[in-house]
Image 1: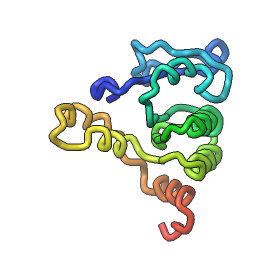
Image 2: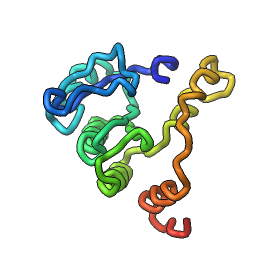
Image 3: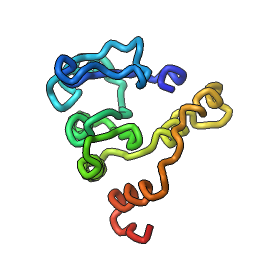
Length: 161
């Protein structure tokens, strides 16, 4: 989707010598990953970020939500950027860690959204020339019971779901 919509993409890998490289299923071929050990992507991408003074917002996804995604979100917010966390493209080994990290990011000022919601926001109109090409990239909705858990965790007072 990023390629189709010409959205710049930056890729980092957390300690690839020990944890391994980015899996091919993510479709990141052609991207040059930057290795890092810091739990934020910002130090590894400092030069790239500094070279884009017009940059106002970032879409963020990856693993682990409670480590790299959370720390990157906080660092990007500190730089004055809008951060849009793609919740269905962020994971953790523990669902509790994932949900608490997403809640913390939201409390800190990040926007939480879904892949589909952000794709629609990027194309803006069904008349967009790439609209039909990006539609297959929309993930299927999660099972209803998982949706209820996520809504309850992220939206206080929503226990009625």
